[in-house]
Structure formats: C-alpha cells, structure tokens
Image (cartoon, rainbow, N blue to C red; front, side, top):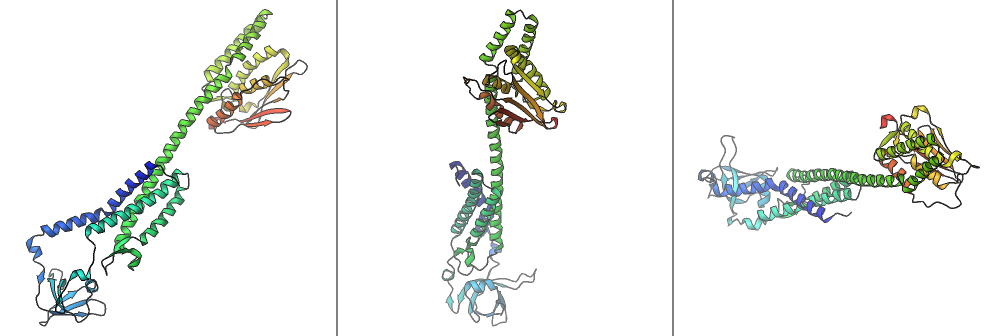
Amino acid sequence: MKLRYSDWILNLLVAAAISTVVNFSYVLLLVVEQRGDTQQPAPARRQIVERPDEGVLHVTPDGHGYVVYENGDSVYAPMHRIHRLGLADGDRLVIDLMPMNRKHGAHPMLHKLRMRNGADFDYGTVFNRPSAATDISVQLLYYLLLSFVLLSVVTATRRNGGDVARASVVGVAVAATCYFVAPVIDWRSGHIVPNFSTGRMFDYMLLLKWTFAVVASLLYARIYTLISQRQAVELENEQLKNENLTTRYNLLVGQINPHFFFNSLNSLAMLVREKENEKALTYIDQLSYTFRYIIQNGQSTLMTLDEELKFVEAYGYLFKIRYADKLFIDMDVAPEYLDWRLPALSLQPLIGNAVKHNTITRANPFHISIRTEGSWLVVSNPKVPKLTPEPSTGIGLNNLCNRWRLITGCEVEIVDTEREFAVRMPLQSPAQS
C-alpha cells in the first residue's frame, strides 16, 4: 500500500489531534489538581487530622481493614490502600486520617501512613510511580501511534482502490491488538505496564479512551474516502470533457474534409456543364442541408433516428449524383423506432467509409443497408475492396465508437467478415434520453 507524502503528514496531524482530544480531560484534570494543591483554602487543608498515637490494623476476610486504638476509636482502611501500601493484619500504624463525614454518616478513613511498626514509613520504597508528565507523554504517544496506524491502513487502501470496509475491519483488529498493549499504571507496583499484564482487561477509562480514538479515526477515514471519491469523480469528469472535446474536434475534421468538399463541387460542376438545372438546384439544396446539419449538430449529443435518416437522404443524394445509378442506400427502419435517439452524425462516417473503401461500378452496383433489428440500428455493406486501397486514418470509426461510449455509455458492435462489414448500434429509447 502506497501513500503520498502529503497523506502521511495529514494522517500524522489528524492522529496528533485525536490523541490530544482523547487525553485532554486527563490533562485538564491534572492541571486542576495541581492548582487545587496550591490554591486550596486553609480550612479545607485542615480537614486532614494527624493522630500521633499508635493503632493496630485488623484486616477482615474480604480485604477491608480498621485501625483500632486503645480508647476504642477505629479508622477505616480501604482495601486498595492496604494492598498498595503492603500492609498486613496486626501492623502497628501511626496515620493521618480524614474525619467522619457526619452528613453522610461515613467512618473516619485512613489518609496517609506515617509510621509502621515503629519505623517511619517511606512512600518511595513502596511506589515507584512515574511523574505526571511522563504518564501523559506516554499516553499521548500511544494514542498518536494508534490513530496514525489506523488512519494509514484505511487511507492507503482507499488510495490503492481496495475495499475500504474490509480495510476498516482490519484496522479495528489491529486497534484491538493495540488495546491489549495499551500503557496503564499498575496499581500494585505503580509502574507503567502493558494492559494485559494488569489482570484488569476491561478498565472502563482505558476502554472509553480507546473507543473514542478508534471511532474518531474511522470517522475521519470515512470522510477522507468520501472526499477522495468526489475528487476522483471530478477528475474523471474533466477527463471525459477533454476527451469529448477532442472527439468532437476529430469528428468535425473527419466530417468536413477537403476531399469530400471538392468532390461535391466537381459533381455540381458536372451537373452545370450538362445543363441539368433542376438536378443542380436540388444538389445545391441537399449540399447546403448536409453542411448545415453537420455544422449545427457537430456538438449535439442525441438526435432522433428520424432526423438522422433525413440527413442520410440528403447526404446520400450527393453520392447518388456522383455515382449515377451505381450506388444505393436501402432503408428498412421500423416506424416505432423513428423517435428513438442516437448520437448525432452516427451514420455519415459509416456511409463515407463504405464508399471510400469499396469498388462501385455500373456492372456491380453498390448497396448500403440501414435497418433496425429490434432496438439496434444496423448499417452494413458488402466488401468489394478496391484494387488500390484508399489511405485510411481510422478517425471516423474510432470517433463513432468513442462518442457512443461517452454519450450513451453503450458500446458499438463491429462485425467484420470476409464478405460483409456491419456496425450495430443500440438505440436509446425516449425514456432514457
């Protein structure tokens, strides 16, 4: 999977943003706690009571404990603090405590351990907890890498034309693996360790942060996919426009060429010399109609079959005058298809090519067939190659195939056998236009 350099940078920036948002509440809480330590009012700080006398710890079977004094007072010791401080039943303790909350009827609770069994208690020997800055740095780096990997998998798949849904599933699977190695602080040792080694695989806070990172990454990947698809469509449209313009230009070059124009003038001159005035006037009208139709519809998209056949009559008349009684255009079109549509000037290059590449003599008159076969328009002619083949650029037939593909989305079928050349074109119903 290949990504552009800009994609790597963008994914990294988005991953950094996701990581920051995921850990923002943690950072904010850290700042608030630090400010609370320095700005806490004196009455609140004095709520912690130092008790200089020694009490004995009694641990119940369920893991909770009480520090019991000689005068009968007792202080509750939470189970998690007993474990974290490594205390045992019967330990003699000097502690600071939080007084009883009379409003809620709470028991006085162990706050801080000062002495254990006659010796000062050193928290540093129990906890080797990393600093808050180290903890947040590790968290930021982890979620940065998690988001970056997930984004890279999905966006690279999209850029290489793969299945984005499948890539998302693979990304989530990778993210699930990353969940098991997520950095957490072990409550027993205070060290930063992989999540799987703590024995608490479903830490709700970790799961919440991990879920947010994965969902945010997938949402961005989806947005990226939609934007990429839109850009691809716009690029394809631009390419189609350029191809369409090129095709239209080539079409006009193929339609109005000097060879056809001069042949038409020669035929007109022949009629004038022979004083065929009526034929000459008709020829001028048909020639004018032919060129006007070509110029006006050279940039059109679809025309009705009826309009195309009228053009063929005019265009064919020019060849009939030129070849006298040697060329015939036979039409067999079902009336119900006359209002069906096809790209403008589809028949002209086929007739022109048939005349250009075949021998036309009085002994062997040449017939061009235009007929419908169901909803297909078929133009065919027998193959009677000239002894000296005419040079061909292939522009006319290529233009026809390209225009049908661009305008209708359908393909033209070409049937070329030893005896016949035929082109089959699917007509478009009025409902499709």
